[in-house]
Image 1 (cartoon, rainbow, N blue to C red):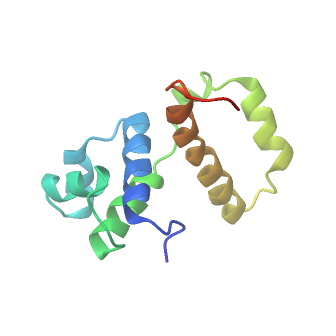
Image 2 (cartoon, rainbow, N blue to C red):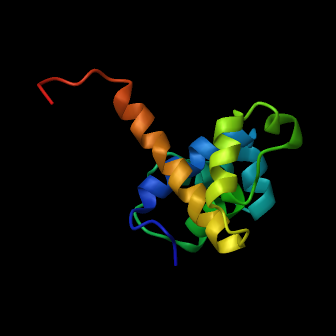
Length: 118
């Protein structure tokens, strides 16, 4: 079962992660035995349910981690925050990664000026 209720949202988050990890749709398609167009549909949020293909694409993308060369680019304040709260378990690592990835939606919202008073 997916951590997301909405397949489209999960696909869009997977697309963001794929871009950050340097994964192309063609590479993902070859890795999971699908076509590039099928992968494109998942990553563009066009899937409405958690199909076998959807799970395969998202599992593959989310299993890719930051490369060692990218670690030096992560601000120490972020690394320290993760160290402070992570208990070392794979389950909590997945949960923390989900929370961090979900913050990407907030950055998109804050990029557009709001109308009205707070």
